[in-house]
Amino acid sequence: MLENRIKHLLQRDQAIFGVGLTGPIEVPVLRVLAQAGVEWVFLDVEHGSTDISGLLPAVQMLDAFGVCSVLRIPSLDYHWVARALDTGALSVMVPRVESVAQATLAVQWAKFPPMGVRGMGSPSYLSYAPVSVADGVKISNRETLVVVQIESVAGVENVEAIAAVPGVDVLFIGPLDLSISLGRPGDVASDESHCLFQRVCAAARAHHLAVGIVCQATQVRFYYDMGVRMFSIGTALTYLRAGVQSAAAEFRRQVGG
Image (cartoon, rainbow, N blue to C red; front, side, top):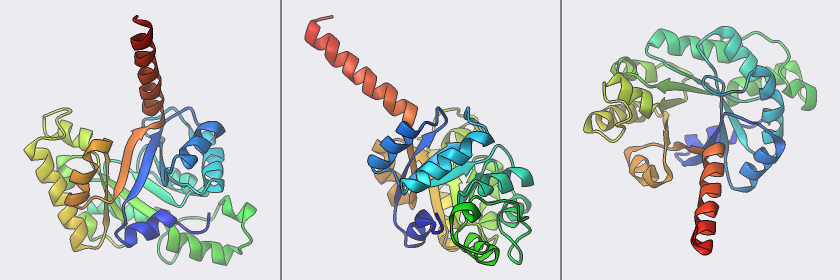
């Protein structure tokens, strides 16, 4: 994929629908997600069961199905940023960003010179796309989406400065971790949490960035009105469980079990 469709949609202030996928990453699952209308898949290497070797086929298959991959790396390290993007994904998500220095490194490591310091290894697009190395560098620098997660009180306290870092595209709110950081684990609907979310949204608006969040489908309008445009709603496994539970409940209702 040589065009990052979700980046362009976000730049036009359009909302995008995504789901999480922590494992198993299998072709039938990816195909079902694509056919269900998913625009982006949150591939989680920070907490999920997938390692780097499992990302390449997932990114390639999602690409073929017209779905954008967003890879959340485990930590802010050069090799994680570079290897994630070398799968061919054009979007990387960095967890636990709390400072300008961290945000700057994320951008620098995601972009080739002169925009950054990313090294040229073997980006997968050079294997299947008819582009030169020079064009590949230009395309990568233009299309790569850099998503930084704001998921602590410290991150919110510095969010205005983080949002001002050139090359940052999305401030992605981590509601659960923010609630833990506030000392209210799991209470993502508290006034304190919402005040932090609103501060992130205000910083993003001031610098023409997008805001993302993990939420439930019933919460979309609330966060949309707040300014969120990048939504990760549920995971493939939670939808699988919900579907089976619904069928089991209906089965027991009909047989009187």
